[in-house]
Image (cartoon, rainbow, N blue to C red; front, side, top):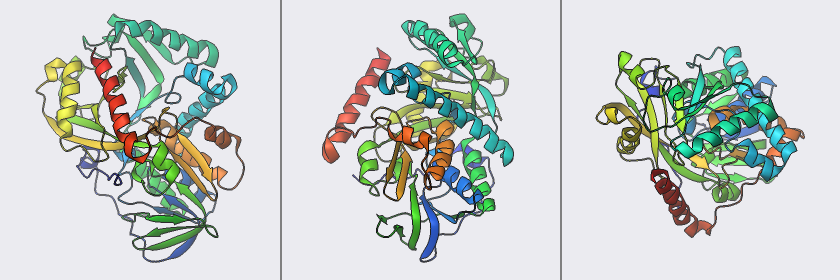
Amino acid sequence: MKSPRSDSTPTWYEAGLPAPQRHAPLGGDRAADIVVVGAGYTGLGAALHLAERGRDVVVLEKAAVGSGASGRNGGQLHTGQRREQDYLEKTVGADDAMRLWRLAEDAKANLKELIARHNIDCDWREGLVEAEHRKRFVPGAHAYARHLRDHYGYDQLETLDRDALQTYVRSDDYHGGVLDRGAAHLHPLKLARGMAEAAVRAGAVIHEDTEALEISQQGGVSVRTPHGTVRAQRLILAGDALMRGLDDQADSCILPIASTIGVTAPMGERLKDFLPALTAAFDSRFVVNYFRPTPDGRLLFGGGESYSTEPVANPGRLVRAAMKKVFPALADEPFDYAWSGVVGVTTTRLPLVRRMGNAVLAAGYSGQGLALAPYFGRLIAEAADQADARFDMLTRLPTPAFPGGAHLRWPLMVAAMSYFALRDRL
């Protein structure tokens, strides 16, 4: 299977920003303390933290800063891990489940502190609604909110019946839900570029248009690129689903899936006919729909997935089918922008974090990367030099390889995803 490539389709995020100052490709061989592969949230979080500690850090990015999922996602920052706490309690035990909860809360706090300290203007707005698309799901969602309050002390959740939900999401498709005042939404590309600028100010070096082609761990580490080789003491692999062929474990445990997003023309006050409180939301489908208002009065809607390693040829078609179900009155609403982005998922939807000799790997956030990845970058930066209990706990998370081997795992996964997508419609 060939390596997935970044989607070059312009996004609403890019269109609203000035052209960034590009970072020159690597220009020959060089040495560093630590080399990072990938200029997304994980790699930039690691580079920033290491540079602030005086380390010589080189970041290699095959395209541009934030050109992968970090700069093309839906901009929703969720609470907790990708899997619910009751699942984690059964899977890793009550003690580690509590540690994972605290780590996720620390990740949100770390991101807010990082944004404030480096004055990153990324349109942060608090509040996120989970909307239940099946009436039978509502009691479970409300019970889980009480579980988080009673066992984890999380008091930011408000349960919503069908009428209360209509004050946030005006759609007959949903039957109730939960408002999380401790979650948020933001402009993901502004965040990625702001983190890159902060890392460079701290002394990190970023090379764009510099693809890592081969890794060696003989006498430290070396990363070969088309423009030269970087030799270092340590390596951080942070390319998520876009670094196939660099590491066997990442290849076997991470599956790239293309998610699609569309952004309407400015809707003005009419946007409140669908999102009356202008709060972001996502729903309970396996193939999740997620949507939010933009600061310039558009509706950003994500829905539909393509089980391919390639960017989606016509992302607007997939998004429109999903949006029509949630908001039928917008069936013919034009999209000014539509794009796809490749995200890495694991079998358990838990992140893949591993130490491999002089290399550290963190990837496979399965849609939870906006909250977790910047903090994980910091954690693996700290773990590059010394033992860290939080990092060790993350390495114990179960993320087995996808079944079927190199030839069968893709069709098997597509069949499973298709089944769950069908179940969403029943």
